[in-house]
Image: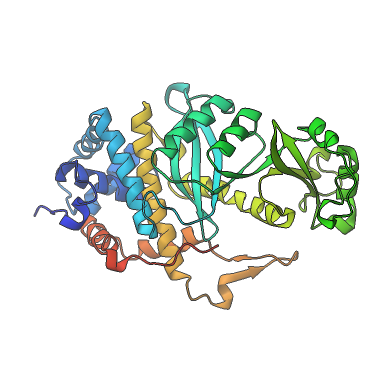
Length: 399
């Protein structure tokens, strides 16, 4: 018996044949079941998913590889539609995201035939979880350049309204041109700096003030470092208003809580450049940046083994990442729903007073879905329910 894909699902992919949508969803569930994007592994899951033990494994493998031989334009459209579907599941319209924080980072590894895959990724933070919005394979080992990051954001801005969102990023995502571009696009920023960067600008912004908010304006760079090391400023840090190319920023130094004597001296202090107007808010927000590292971990070693990808070509890789991101989002959303009413055992309190979930939203949702998604029929039925606007949660976007 041939399984027909319900009209509710087909509506999300109006430019594609039903057979293409069916193969795409079958591949997505195969990746989920195999815990790997390697097509050699995925093909082994298809007999159980389709309840078809007679078709040879090689035939299943050819079915999967043919999917990635679709015309390039169609692969791009499918990738974008999968992203839109992911956001719909989250309860957000494609171009009107209501959350305030974005995370930017890259993950790289050696791909097929020794070529490097470098995914520059932009995520939206939902309930403390980074959800992929946009990515690009830079296909190189080193860091992205300012020009590459600006081009990357220009492309993302064609698809999303990101104005007034705050970008959280690590030390390699700096540069005058890039900071200026973010400012011109009305994006807020909160980015970590390497030690010594913008020292001249910090030392140049000197004046004394009776204003409590500006009391550290008389401090030079080295004096700020000394002050930030004092126990009194362990949690609050030291801040100073500076200008870079005529644009105002807040420069912050605070102590790295994880650093201890004997560790790398360069890691003792954390330096931030931000357009947020309060240092406490900036320090608290920067800690959210770690969520993109957790996202990469779940897409790779702890979830879908993305590093096992055996495809070549930008649009093929983009489509595979879109499939993995879609399944990742389904797991996270199910985790949100499962943990809405938390028990005491769902939380763990650490010595420093911080409280975290015992099991992440992703792991919680993934474990639950494994109990209900046994066959391709189960998966399609589940998606038919999820894609019904009446069933989409309305209040997931909470910080």
